[in-house]
Amino acid sequence: MRIRKSKPGALLAGGYLLVMFAAVSSLVQDGYVGHGNGLVFLLAGVLTFPLSLILLLVNDLVSDVNAFYVTGWPYYITLLELGVSALVNATAIYMGVVFIQRRRR
Image (cartoon, rainbow, N blue to C red; front, side):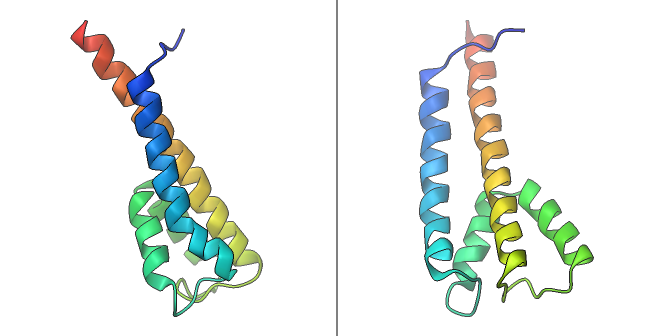
């Protein structure tokens, strides 16, 4: 199966990834999720919904780390979860635009 190329899909997915990068950049600069950037973490979670919610719930069940004060290796796992969720959402955005463009022709 060949995936069609879509400039609008690439622009929307790229724009989404840029917004996501801007939201997560303060988390990366601070090096932890804490009191000063908890709302930024919440915004990143909302932007990567629904996969991030599932991954963060699994992370919460497996570890005993407080979601709004994360340092060390759980912090890096949390950033990895947000990154994977953002890539999955960007792929879904791209594929959705390709599907809509194919249906219109």
